[in-house]
Length: 254
Image (cartoon, rainbow, N blue to C red; front, side):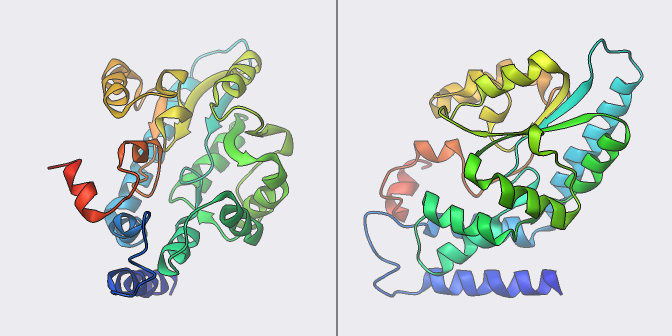
């Protein structure tokens, strides 16, 4: 039933986004370019397959690591949004209703505690906990959102300790929080949907620089870094023209 509802929800999203009403045509900003991404995210089997593939690979990697001795407790570090929790229904609602994203709108979404689990995430995290591996969450959610986030995790049955939630304080970069975790644990893997979830190398870089750095870290992907697919949003959007008009977007790829 949930998949059927998602299909119709996305169908309505497309129709509303393609309509010619004046609200949808507003300038200088439109989110029309995201419609296909939300459709793929919510309806494609390929998206779910990629998530399962990421977490299946992570389990193989973890099992291999568990065969070795560590001087400190093992840990896994997870981003939250679009890595463990699926916020696509909140974002799709905004697009359908011609709403821009801002912190207030995300606050309202988080308070609903309505995010679902990314395919494969809950099962893998529960397995890691059963093997006495510490699960850490480094997220750029606000510290005021911790309680709602924990309740969302609880509803889904995803293990999470309040003391293991490292949320946004002053710096959008996650590097300081990563270093803090690395002082306490042997981190086996990092999980995320944005390159900034893995290493400071990708902080405040251009798109060309980010792609080049991916090549320099080639051996880390699937080994130390586990990437979850997210075409909905991310630092890659910084390379797009501010207007987000179709004609301007096409100039960036043609």
